Image (cartoon, rainbow, N blue to C red; front, side, top):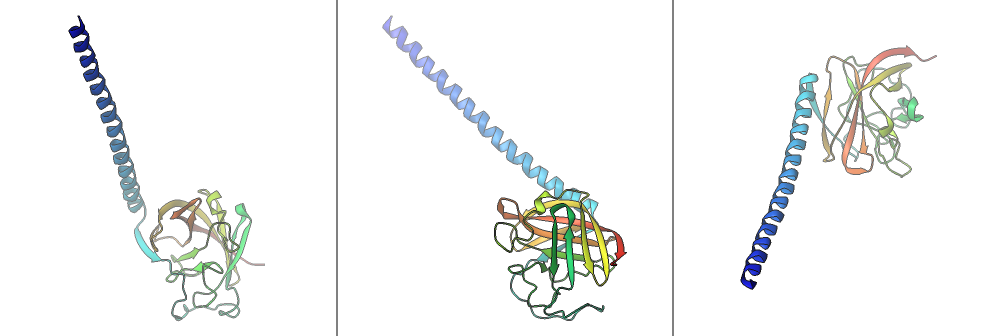
Amino acid sequence: MLKMEKKLSRSERIHRTAFIGAIITIIGGFFLSYNYVQAKKVMAYDYMANMFYNGTEVVEIVEEEEEIKPLEDQDLPGDVVDEYVGFLTIPKINLTKGFHDKRSTRNNVDTDLLVVSGSNYPNIEKGNLIIAGHSGTGWNSFFNDLYKLQIGDTAVVSFNGKKYVYSIVNIYQQPKVGKLAIYRDYDKTTLTLITCTNYDSTSQTVYIAELSSVEDIN
């Protein structure tokens, strides 16, 4: 009788071990499947983004001073070295902030908004004005509330006597590695805003806005 009880006890242990092994296998399979699905989602997003937009431009976010380059052929107001050449206004988050010319030593993301090298001013048809700013708790976190923006919200750039009104059409994130891809419609005049993702210092959020109207500043 004792021998029978020992055999049953050993059998129970074997079944229990097999059951635990099956549970571990199921859980491991779940996580593998989840990671696979997430990877496929990212691939699908990148594919759709490239399908929807005509092309992709890659920009480098340089925080130190760059070599001074010639201005575009246009009439700029004020002193391009010391004065703001334009203002960015986003009504939803009560933001109004000036920006300097691309060749100014004050065009620096650590002290102001940064007009990214290679971007265009608003009066360039089918161009793209790219502005980067910090998020966080510091005094220079001018883009800290950008995370509140949604598709359809308005951003306004005042430049050279005119107001350029834009509507946000796309919001996406990319890893913070010094460079990022900008997905936009190259048949449209656009504004791109870049900042660190809220509560995530490893990624950046990109806001693409398309020009909807141009008004004279009274």
